[in-house]
Image (cartoon, rainbow, N blue to C red; front, side, top):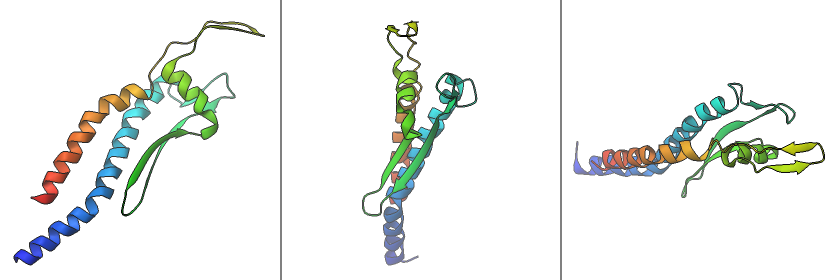
Length: 132
């Protein structure tokens, strides 16, 4: 291989790196959250008592010059239940009677925080491999 071919190879790998790194990161975050969501919803990803609502975790990666990845909870109309699972609820009195509140399960925040060091290390490792 010539020096020119080596440089072209590195440039091509660097050009692909942001998209590849972001895709891998969002997949790792999604994969970290899904088992916890499954556990906290009884295995079926559904919340009883609110129309048997199904929650999901999806990913999206877009961009060319600036690659953006999102791990989203859904559907959008069910953002409240996600917060209830993550943060818990406070006791309150409603027209139907007393609600004793729920314990915070940290369904979203704990798995993301736990996965973050591995995601960062993976990105750094991949970058070093690209520029070698």
